[in-house]
Image 1: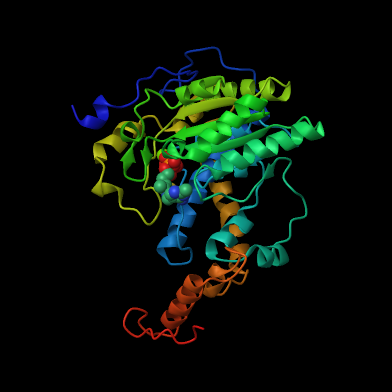
Image 2: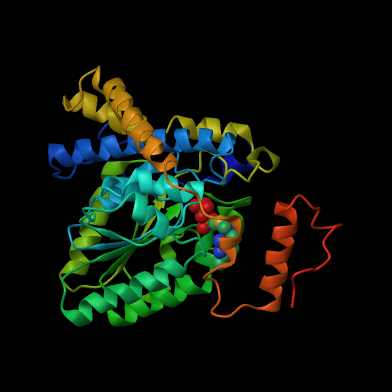
Amino acid sequence: MPQWQEERPDEDFFRILDPDGEVVKDPPEISDDTLLGMYRTMVLSREFDEKTLHMQRRGEVSIIARATGEEAVSCGSAAALKEGDWCFPSYRQTPAGLYWGVRMDRAVAALMGAEPETIDEHLPVDEEPPVTFTPIYVPLAVNVTNAVGSAMTDRFRGDNNVTMSYIGDGSTSQGDFHEALNFAGVFDAPSVTVCQNNQWAISVPAHRQTAAETFAQKAVAHGIPHERVDGNDILAVFEKSREAVRRARQGDGPTFIEAVTYRMVEHNTADEESVYRDEDERVYWEDKDPIDRFETYLLREGLLDERDPEDIRETVREDIQEAVNRAREVPVSEPETMFDNHLKDDTWKREHQRAELRAELDGRNPFTDFTGEGLE
Ligand SMILES: Cc1ncc(C[n+]2csc(CCOP(=O)(O)OP(=O)(O)O)c2C)c(N)n1
Ligand SMILES: [Mg+2]
């Protein structure tokens, strides 16, 4: 048996829908609108990933990280939030933002390299989403510390809001993650932290990331209630997230949720996954696709009829294309601005890198033709 199969996580987690879409536990009470909203969001996110991947291949976008196959995790958990709540995503939670109406045109413009001020100018926001989304965090785990701080701010102000944040399996090895959970546990922060365990941190498999049996149990040391759910079952993710959000809102403190899913695609478009993992592994997980599973359930419940899935896919593709067209109208920033806003003052190193880039943009080879000209 291949190593990945022997070491795959056991199925010791909370599940409502099995991979065939069969109900194995009583489903939670969820309105039809919410169920259909979640389904549409998952489809939208999958199609958004497809579209932006094509844009990346054409050179319109430099890099993307897809949520393909992992949609149920951030969609199902974010759907448990309410107006006034906060969400601190990392880079693989596109569905969470889409669920609450984060604008695709603005997101695509950012991916294409437009600066926030330019995006505001060309694609102004007339209505903020009911849940506040911070910008996407790329430094791993920092969003969790900031989220817990934000949750405490709401508590000190007496606002009854909940803050949700996301962390990958690999990122639970970062110190910030533990500092955040420790602080949340000690001060009963109204926060919910969702670990999107997609089994890989770039090329590092989950079993090389930690000696702990599960990621969920990392909460034990911090005295925080934890849950482990089937991350490809949106009903299970929603149910446990709703319980956690309720607990936080009524003053009973934080929760840590591990959602077990699988990264069906490359880490990001700068990665070549075939170098380090087995194709059979993806094939094994294909049968557990979260969208297919939920779709089967909704069809059986009569909430979707047979033509709906294709119609929905068509409509979201049109919405995405319109958003992309709007984004293409936004001017992208000069490459050199990548050096701005990192540090308060310029350093010699940054000046050097800026000059090197300038050389490259002028068509000179920065390795052989770079003279350091322009440096103080
Ligand atoms: C503090 C920090 N260290 C390293 C990186 C580089 N890096 C980007 S993604 C990644 C792997 C993250 O894996 P995981 O937490 O499992 O999230 P996933 O990408 O699988 O969703 C690393 C090491 C970073 N962005 N930030
Ligand atoms: Mg991961």
